[in-house]
Length: 209
Image 1 (cartoon, rainbow, N blue to C red):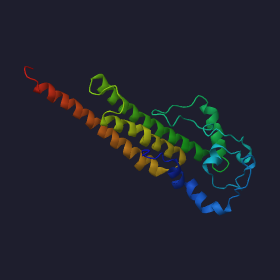
Image 2 (tube, rainbow, N blue to C red):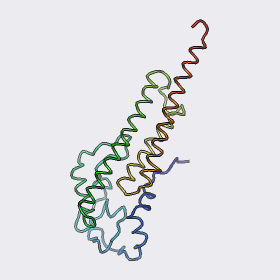
Image 3 (cartoon, rainbow, N blue to C red):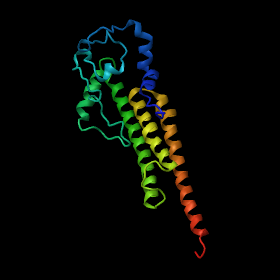
């Protein structure tokens, strides 16, 4: 059992890029060399088109992260050290098909999703850290149910929301992202309250106290 899936392919499939790819696939020039690829060859992009290809004269790369702005895999996502150059390169690829205003709006909205996700993750981290400080959780990882709630919150649903925002998968930002993020944060808070309540009841039940 490998755990819940990381949903990049599902996000792409439901995005407008993925829908266009599925409908236009028979019209694509799949034999075009990556270094010579044009929008006529590939009018709807794949993952490789945006992240790796030399579309319309851009440099081909085998580093799929070269054009990324954020460390999206991280619990709290910060901008990469080379984010200005990386973002400019990715936006250049985007502008082969899209207007600059459309691209700027997507990046602004995606940045908002990243920051909102970061805030939820930081809150969940604070809850778990405070429980450890109070002696209500052990230092051993994954020996208590609440730790799985905390892990799933950032590792699956946080990542899903952030990837969905940059890849144009609205369902994965909302229903498979923020709905699950807020649900898990609520469960985390309730579990923390239960642990504190149990400690209080145990202390009250001790004879002589």
